[in-house]
Amino acid sequence: MTDTFLELVPVYGVWAIALTTFLSCLAVPVPSSLIMLAGGAFVASNDLTLWSVVAGAWGGAVLGDQTGYRFGAWGGGLLRRGLGHRSTTAKLLTQAQNLLDQRGFMAVFLSRWLFSPLGPYVNFLGGAGRMAWPHFTVGSFSGEAVWVAVYVSLGFAFSGQITAVADIAANFAGLLAGLALTAFLGRAMLRSRKKRKLHQSAKQ
Amino acid sequence: MTRRNRPLTIAFIITVALTLFFAVRLVLFMFFQPPHHDEPPTAIEPWMTPKFVAHAWHIPPEIVADTLGLDMPKKPGGRITLHELADERGVDPEVLILMLEQAIQEFELSK
Image (cartoon, rainbow over the protein chains, first blue to last red):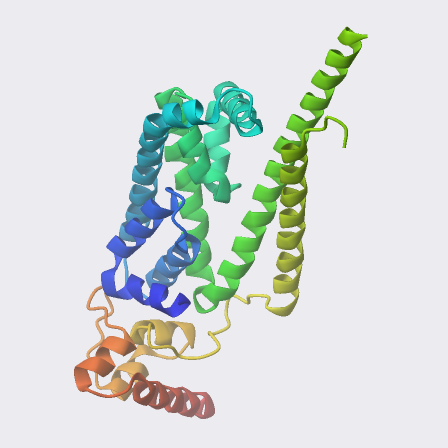
């Protein structure tokens, strides 16, 4: 499976890289980190040029972000109506969107590379919550630049070891995203507990 | 559980478990499979290009070019994978891989 994906890079070049980063920003499970690492490795071996790999990966990613944001804007209203106001999911969604409203740029920027598994969902949420488009776009452009730079340089430096690097990177990213999600859910739990206590003391 | 927000608690527990899962895997991979930036891959694979083989195994591109009977330009472009090359010649990729493995071994011995 891994080999099939890896073969796409030398065969289709930059287009394979751009398509993969595009799809990964829409939560399609494609190995975008591995593909970017391979891009860097083929730059090191003189099979691809650095500028084309960087442009392809970045271009695909920012287009994917914009598409995800659009999807969110279309689907957001429907989802909200479907969930109603009282469900836990609806409440969590509102809290996540409030967070995006307050720290829009930072949330988008960091979810591109540091907490990258969360990226696609931040795209949908940003669109669904009508997050200011310029903030979203600036966060996306700068964050994706960091993401691409990190993986392409790692691929360049570790060209013979890209699958090992991809394994470590995937678990590292999973760990960081997990920690961020744990913190978010923990905060939501504390809030709902506080609210319940207030409710109870008001009744007494 | 008295009037607790059950779905939220369950989601929280799942996230904590997932986080621990990734933490354990990260440690295991770092420990058993640490990447060294100069080391070649474990094996030559059909997805690799001749230039990639030369680069990753630190052998002169001319040796790879001679072994495969190829013209290898220094500049990017003219990419071909061992898979494609094998198809072109109507042989199994393993044949080319064996030839390259032999060439790498000879080069190592001649050093």
